[in-house]
Amino acid sequence: DAKTTQPPSMDCAEGRAANLPCNHSTISGNEYVYWYRQIHSQGPQYIIHGLKNNETNEMASLIITEDRKSSTLILPHATLRDTAVYYCIVRVATGNAGNMLTFGGGTRLMVKP
Amino acid sequence: DTAVSQTPKYLVTQMGNDKSIKCEQNLGHDTMYWYKQDSKKFLKIMFSYNNKELIINETVPNRFSPKSPDKAHLNLHINSLELGDSAVYFCASSQDGFQPQHFGDGTRLSIL
Image (tube, rainbow over all chains, first blue to last red; front, top):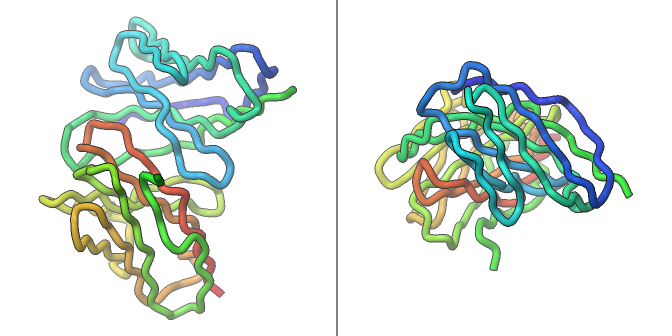
């Protein structure tokens, strides 16, 4: 799986958009970008994933650059409950039991009042 | 209803003991996983399992073994516990290897 690079920490004001970057310069053409987050003392939570088109769901938007070497997770209106560690993961979606996620250090997002 | 549930939530035991952690998912998923999160907060995959194959992370000691009595359960057995086994263990499931994984809230294992 391609390695990812994320800033170790970020702050965001409550109500503002939180933009979390991720670099994955060695990503292959068949690798997807996944985002998960882990709120303190809880298990990781899936947020969104994409291949090359931008994606949006009820939680967030995912913007992937045209060359696919980086992406940005956008939380449009961050709340205090969005304080968590956010993980960017790239991997092949093989459709079998080999889809084992490799977590890096992630970005610790602190949403402040 | 909890989608992926683990028991116990906390487990404190002595070095050398054998223990099990249970995991159940009510999502009808075909694939289940075990992850370990150490004191530095790094999450590492241990096993991936469906009814056809078990995939083991090669770094996992053979003292750890997953047991699946049925599709909804994947228990983790640990023999001869060591101090370094202290960690939070997370169970997860997904419909298949492509779909997003749903995680339990973890079992905090402490070895005395």
